Length: 322
Image (cartoon, rainbow, N blue to C red; front, side):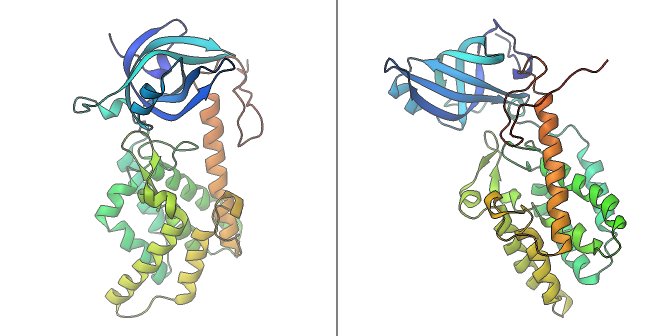
């Protein structure tokens, strides 16, 4: 049976193919029967999955996240496509799995994006900031991870190359916004935006979907980024034969630690400099716009309204204007 991509699935389709399964939950019906609730993913999207009357033994044998062979059918429930599984087994031999079928990848040109990112960062004039930025740009191992990493596990730019795409986007926004405010230190903003999510190269794994690593769960990209700046500054200072500005380093670390804006959203501290406020706003702008665009382009949702989006506190309306 030929594989059908998630974004091509239709009501009534019968399938028997491999998916990445995530977020599995063992539920119990009102009649005390167990069922599986999960998400199935491939490179084109995700779909809700249900399996009724699942045994505890079958549930325990499937990993989340992990590859599963799933046989079932596609139904519509409350306006959404969902996959009703008849059988589900863990895929033990993964040698023949084409991971490109399951990991979404940026649709933009990676070399072009990288060249533009380097071009923007080359405009930094402050010698100490530039030396620190260049130390990362010239680190091949780091940049190889940077250009292939996702920017998030699911919320925005959750695809291979997403971190590069998001970082370039916020840098382009900064090039428009910073000149509007003559007292803003554009060098700090550009460096802070380049560094703000770099810890995601270690926070997230791409083995199945985009799941958190142990380091990501225990430390997180915000603290990782600040730690890397501190460590790299010592290395750059040794090469230059002089210390980098301690005040500059303190401010740069603050930009990373505060870029989520509020502790309830993961910030270590709230933004306390003009540049930190701008970075928080630019980052939030790009993330939210991408989230709303992803919501309205979801192929598994029918009609003019998406389902409820917690981040926006509402479903999103997507009319076709004529």
